[in-house]
Length: 301
Image 1: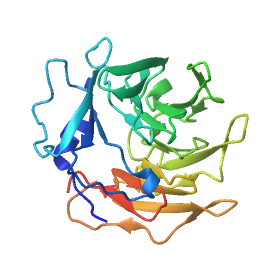
Image 2: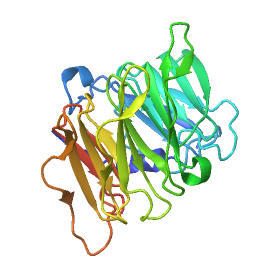
Image 3: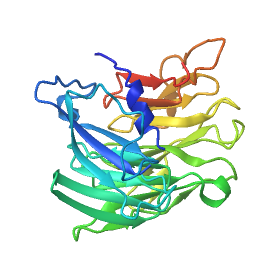
């Protein structure tokens, strides 16, 4: 396994405008996958929430010569500060794309550069995560109702429309930013919701929900982290939803939990770093589909 630090791409994908790039490897590019062969990525997706139709941000990556841009998509009204592209998610094959802005979520069905259909769902936010087949997606708005936060899940209908799946999930307390990060399992029936907190002493927990056929129910107890750590700012789940990685970047640590049949059990030791200056270790993370490989970001390193 080779882990590549795409630092230059983070300047575009940090969630700052209006353009989305779908990039596929060139013919001579070797693909790598941390999951099973069926999870091989179809391309790379990045949002740029402060870009405009006049062009890309000034800090463009120069190492993309082996990749080609397949689609460039602008928000339909290009409203300033709409933060279109703040969060993006692909279906497994890369044919369905979900993009959030502050006001709505855009769903694109993509085939080639000249073929694209779009659905718009009222209610945007800061986070989106989808099932592997693109038939389910969750969208979070952590700033909803005095920063209590809200998460909603949608499913695709046979008439090509989208309907909300079950009840909305709400954060219980002001300033907790419930839904700062979300992660959906492969089948769309397990959902992890992390908290951000206006300051490090709000939130610090993660809830995992399971679809029971009628509504979303809490799976196990709430997973709590150290006070003041921003535990839950970043979450990622395996394809079956039975393993979850959780970042707490203020205290510079990551914990991994596994479903034990009746509750969440800490798997292995806490991953942390000790430095004289903050690196924000755990600010973002991604776990492989089988839970054997974990990538952890430290943007201030």
